[in-house]
Length: 478
Image (cartoon, rainbow, N blue to C red; front, side):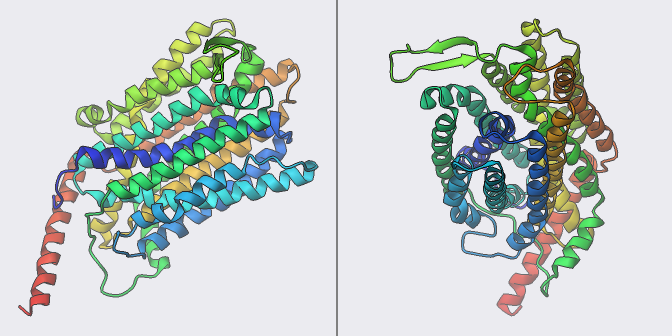
């Protein structure tokens, strides 16, 4: 290995970047579809088509952004500067989605298209370089897993804040007006996200200097080499399944409790009194989502031990299958068995907790594989192309969720018929669970086990040392 060990402060700083990302990502994943249907008043099929168009355009931008970031070089490094440049636009563009102008149905849809697409482009501009930083902060496998663990502790910490506070804050700020409530809540999250990205910029460093080509490398060459990278191709298939699973289930989570369970508006407990300035009510969906996110965080802490016990690939595959069983199990739980729902959700969330950190550590290995196999390292392109695959999963899952809701006859803010209720239940359980199973099957073919990764890292370290010595000798005229 060629880099020093990474300190605690830098790990925390890097993790805050994904807290910033997830204050928006989880907000949109859990509440945006509900906001568009039940608050903004858009047709679910129209939203599904918008998700398809906007997310597809966003996914196409990822490899382009990755190629651009790979070709940038500043005194701050290749990828860190993007956090500084786009932190404020990130906060503003997310808030703009909830501006809620007084428009007709067509005007509202056009406004939703515009603000959603603009936000997605800004998200790409900051998140692709942020993700690529994992592979250049260190080349130590254990530190990469550790950084990835801190990243997803930060991510799910942000998710926990979203799941715990969004619905109570919407009620607090809105006073019964969900439009005002969503606007004010997003303003708070936007300011917090902007500041966190700036902290990440200030506390991290780039240390891994890849082998440099003697001549500029065309984007077409990088893309051609990427398509020859077998580990990356397998991870693409797995990523599509994973994020389609997340998108479908997230789109109907609030709908599931509002229409199938029927207890979404009843507060379970509150903080403060109705006469106080700060009065928060916590309903069943809030407690369900936030307790599940806490279980996720507990699971993330096991990422390192799981890697040591069975390796990254095997750990993701096994845990994904076990989580799939818990998701599918929701189809068979009676609506009145809320305690059972909570227990199953806690178990499933805990099992899924280590998987994101392990997956992103695998992507760092995939970037190393490209340098090892082809002599060309395009770190941001590898990570952005991975994000392309994930966003294709979000695209297909989000669009499919809208189309399925419409096909099952869903209509917002009214009593649903049996067909609509069945559709929501299927979309909350069987559909995402089946996608999780397919994800695990695809990962079976991933070729980089622990032994192969260690051999690859050792050979790369030798190559880099030799190249540095050659460059030093050339500079000194030796």
